[in-house]
Amino acid sequence: MNYNDTVNWMFKQLPMYQMQGAIAYKKDLTNTILLVDYLGNPERNLRCIHVAGTNGKGSTSHMLASILQEAGYKVGLYTSPHLKDFRERIKINGDMISEDFVVDFINQHRSFFENHELSFFEMSVGLTFDYFNKMQVDIAIIETGMGGRLDSTNIIRPLISVITNIGLDHTVFLGNTLPLIAAEKAGIIKENIPVVIGEYTHETKSVFDAKATETQSEIYFASDLISEDYPSALLGNYQLHNKKTVLQTIRVLQSQNQLVITENHIKKGFLAVIENTGLHGRWQQLQEHPKVICDTAHNAAGLTSVINQILQEQYAHLHIVLGVVNDKDLNEILPLFPKKATYYFCKPNIPRGLDAIILKEKASENDLMGEIYSSVSEAYQVALNNAGTSDFIYIGGSTFVVAEIL
Image (tube, rainbow, N blue to C red; front, side):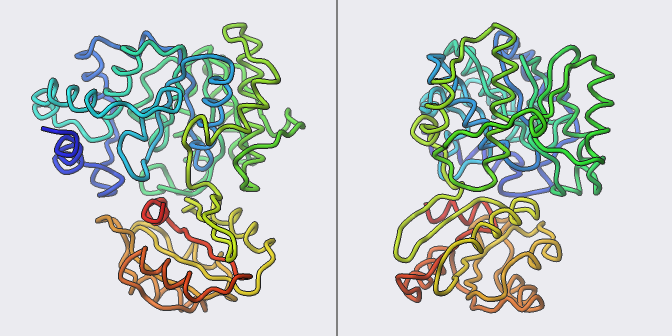
């Protein structure tokens, strides 16, 4: 198989949450342990930073990687989902894994995957650990897929664990209260390994404190400890919280004396995060006049922050290109959107995409008015055609909507 054949096989043969949703979720680490044992436990040779959280874990992971790259380290970065190409998930110093490595890995181990019915995510995690080990990275930033306790990445023993924040998302799998979700995320806290918490509430703090006591882990609440701010190439207002999380993580790493990181590395890392890592889709400006911003925020907490920033902008009229996935709680997110805007409803081109007709019906119940379009690209093009030079266009609601216009 060539690269496209290989990736299509990975997508189609086995469950993939990005495409299919709930069917792909496995509440078990058995397969992952089986796989890494079969591969010779490559993860044991890696120095890792483990990052979980409802929102911000991607931005946090990329900023950490950028700072460590500026410090001269060979940095592996594993994140999900991808926007355009599967290989975005697995990078070293900003360069994606080669097509040949992906093809060879799948071809070499395909019978094992099939015999043990491994999920798409389990295969991806195995591939990541094997690749980072063979490429001899100095440090690997490993982002969880969903949750923490039972996430396939949760077989590593990191230098430090990081939990950005807790919000209501993936409640079918992780629980429908903040303490329940916090307990799942806190599952990445390991015995005698320090943990940094980005943001917390009274409800979640007690969960984190209890887990850290149980594991005898030093715990650091970044929002209480970090007051300084650094300019960053990531311009979303919500990045202030993520930067504090990153800074506290770096401070702990510095105190461990395992990595040499200077203030200059930190400053340059924040400013060069997009250039160093290739991160896209976070309050990303696509053009000026009219100003066009896309953002991958897709749950209530993330959208609240983004919409607040939109409303701080100066514009004559607001246009919103909106699409979501079919497991999204519309009653939770649609009331957040401004009524004084023109909406362009569309369906992201994946099986999980919610029919734009349903989205429009639900939106109209919240006085969000607009028309239905056959694709994300058509919705965006019509918005561009309709917008005046002093208008503002926002594209979002789902990572997969943003992926289609980048």
